[in-house]
Image (cartoon, rainbow, N blue to C red; front, side, top):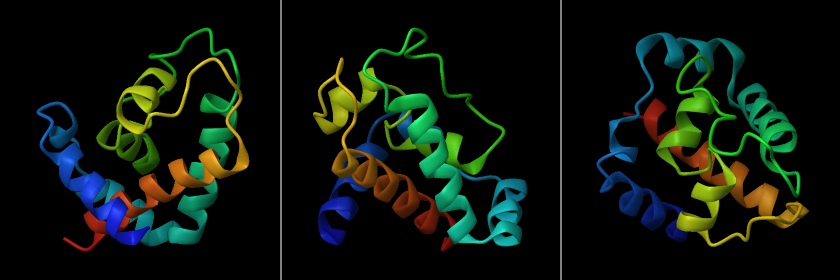
Amino acid sequence: MEKDLDKLLVTLSKSKFRSRFHLKDIDKKYVEDKGLEKIESHAVDFITSRLASKIIPNDGKQTPMRGHPVFIAQHATATCCRGCIYKWHKIPMNKELNTEEKEYIKNVIMKWIEKEMNG
């Protein structure tokens, strides 16, 4: 799975839109201050509250472009809305995300954040 995520992140980094997202110093400091475990719990909360439902009335607009490292990671990894998740990750729209799908999305986000934190 680790290799698959690395390959995915390389593919995403070739997208002109996705490649423009990076953690700024203030975002990195936030991650350092909170710790990866807390950031991961934020990711789980955001996935659950903004992405997991079968129908999302504001799909495509539910994830801010800044304000939290997870939001930035979601845009960089195409996990920001169900449309992008379908396009890039082939997880169908119009169905509630199952536990495995939520875990996968969390892992993608956290892998990207860890790479950003490590240079």
